[in-house]
Structure formats: structure tokens, C-alpha cells
Length: 193
Image 1 (cartoon, rainbow, N blue to C red):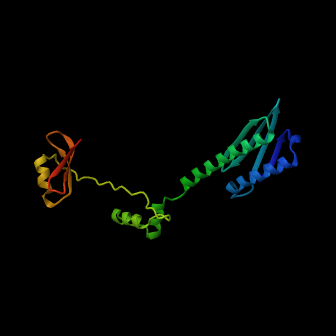
Image 2 (image 1 turned 180 degrees about the vertical axis):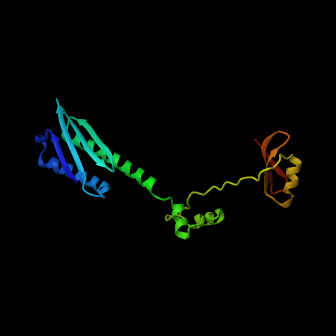
Image 3 (image 1 turned 90 degrees about the horizontal axis):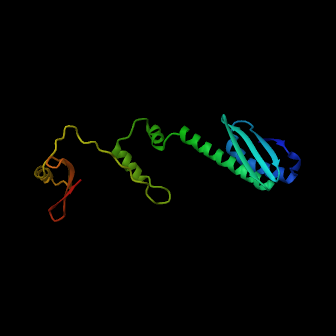
């Protein structure tokens, strides 16, 4: 990284310049992927305060790290830290907007078509994370068939004759959403909203 100093540079010792160079070398690893970058380091001193500004252009964005402190080294470190936070945030934002999502990437590699929800769910269950813990479970939204009419409690009990574990229905008497659950002893539990 090319460093350009301006301001009161006579107070910079060789030790301070190497410190600036080493701190900005770490940043240059994050941002120097295409060509050489320039960093403008501006130092002003007013009364007993040292003011540092580090200007850096990355991917058509002007990044500024500014700090004020009575100690020259502290002001420099604060300015570099602020600049580093901006660089990391900008790279994360760029990476998030320019990368494919993992699900899209896996379907592209497998042949292009979208996977059915059942197969995608099984693949996620089989692909546990490397530390042995399963990934977060996926939630599949099931759209009810259009044209379903509200039911009474007796109709919901009749619908459970085919050994279903539960039935979710809109109660016609109360006009609310209800869930009828089959208990292990053969009786039913009714949950109404």
C-alpha cells in the first residue's frame, strides 16, 4: 500500500511510520486484490490534541478513519481501527450481495432443476454440520386447498375416522381456527383460538 503523508509530519519518527505501515499492511490484505491502493494520512495538531485522518478509496467508496487524542500513538491506532471496521463491513456487504446462496449453488451443481421439498428436507437432515450438531430445521409451508368450507366439531370428528392424528379446521359455529387432536386413549383434545 502506498502511503501519502500530509500535515505535521515532522513529529513522525521512524518507529511511528513503521507502526502505521504495519497496521495498514493488514488492511491492504483485505482490500488489495486488484492493483495498488493509496492511503492519505493527514495529521493536525491543535493545542495538545493530535488529529488523524486516514483516507482510502476502495471499490469506488471513500473510507475515512478519523481520531483525536492527546497521545500521537493512541490517535493513530484509533483512526486505523475505525478504518478497519469500515473495510470489514464493506467487504461483508459486498460478499453477501455478490455470492450465490448455498441452496441455489447446490441446485446449479446438481443439474439445474429445483429439488422437490421432500428431497431438499432429506438432504438437509443428512448433511449435518461438521461439529456433529444438526443444522436448524427447515419449515415447509403447506397451502390448504382452496374452497374449503368451515366445519362443525362433529364433522371434524368424522374427518378423523381415517386414523389421522389431528385436524385443523375453521369452526363454523364460532368462526375461529380450531385444532382437534387424537389422544392415546382414543379421546380427543380441542384447541380453539
